[in-house]
Length: 200
Image (cartoon, one colour):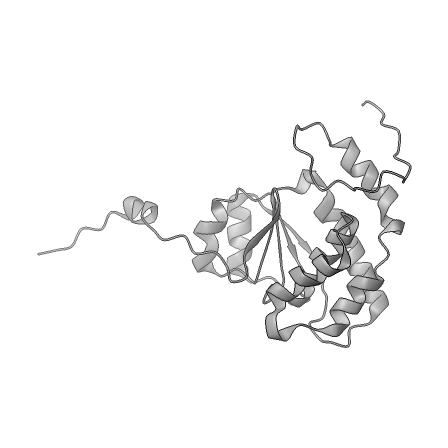
């Protein structure tokens, strides 16, 4: 007797599998390791608008096809996965990635590298500094994802990262798009001068 397969119901009953090291960072901000096709149904549930990819390697065609089908924008910042990455290069890439990450027009957004540990951990760690987290909490979060692979060079980079040079730029983005009721990714340091809002 032939077998009849109902693909629609089959898809509805599919188990949703998140990428390894997946977690919510903030409302509409997520982190993970490199997604594979088995993770695509899960990613669909996040209604992503953007992905930040922190590796220099080209994005696989099957992943690009998924992004196109879901109208998801890809931002790639090619950070080498080695421990001896040039600090100025790393700083520039993290700065640029932070500008994309903090801009709520790009949300919901997923940040990932290869394993979701070091490069992703550095970016999230610098975001936490921007949010005025104490350093011990920033390090604890980094180490929770990096585990035994924790790198002192990453922790040093996060500790030395100067968020003040980015603050004014980010303030203008945050307050310009702060029309929603939710307070997203705002600074606790109210001593910095906030830019005056202009209506468009």
